[in-house]
Figure 1: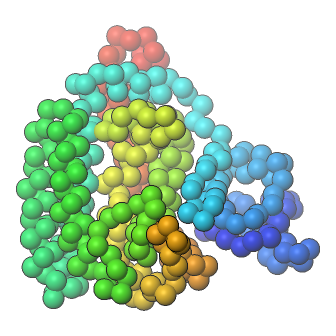
Figure 2 (figure 1 turned 90 degrees about the vertical axis):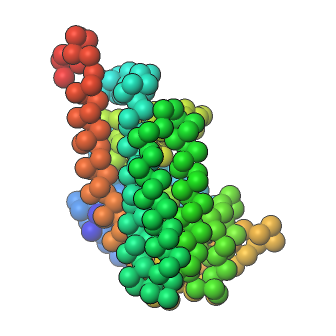
Figure 3 (figure 1 turned 90 degrees about the horizontal axis):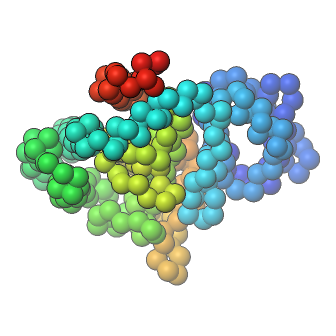
Length: 322
């Protein structure tokens, strides 16, 4: 086990030796060893001590707090990578368009390719929707070929936006009519599928942020996404090619009826919220796609590190010491 999901009100977590001990109303209800954990997701009214937070940080365990009814994420990070020189080189790369633009192009290229591949694979399982899915996949493949031809970020983002419209129009064909999915919407999500996509993307983003810190990068400094106050722009870059993995997960959850429209509620303002049963089912199944995502994040960050090291001016005394 690498992730622990806690979504239960009134839980108190204490540290005993190298294990987490869970109490509910004073009664001991379970124990989990710290050693195999890499991250903990908390939701609900959970109580734990600062000494426990410190132990988890020293052990390299990140904590993702999903707060409020919408599950907005806050991260408590483990000790970051100690070598700040890579982050200096990352900043230098972002300021050099000749080095930064190819990274942004590669991100969009990988995302569109992943979207096209997913739709093709889905078409094999949904032959009745094959025409719509394959048509969209072919359109995305054409767009994929344009990614490295875009000479600036504005044109590249325009291509990404056009591809998203094509992709989600096709994705809607996979979703049962009872889920009332008409396309991607957020802030707030207004149907069960979008509620699940938003939560899945939140977890994906948290994984990317933790991974970026762990590899020595600054998750706030990206290449495709501009600097924006409070936004982990590199994490936003990292998740783009991985979104179809979470899209596949959400589709299968509804297709296999692990999630149903009746598991959700709609607020007066139109926000669609996951009920407790829906969240439990979601967390019980999400670890498998997240494991796939973690492996791909590792590969991407290693590649990014090599690219930055290889394209940095080796006459620079900082890079010479790496």
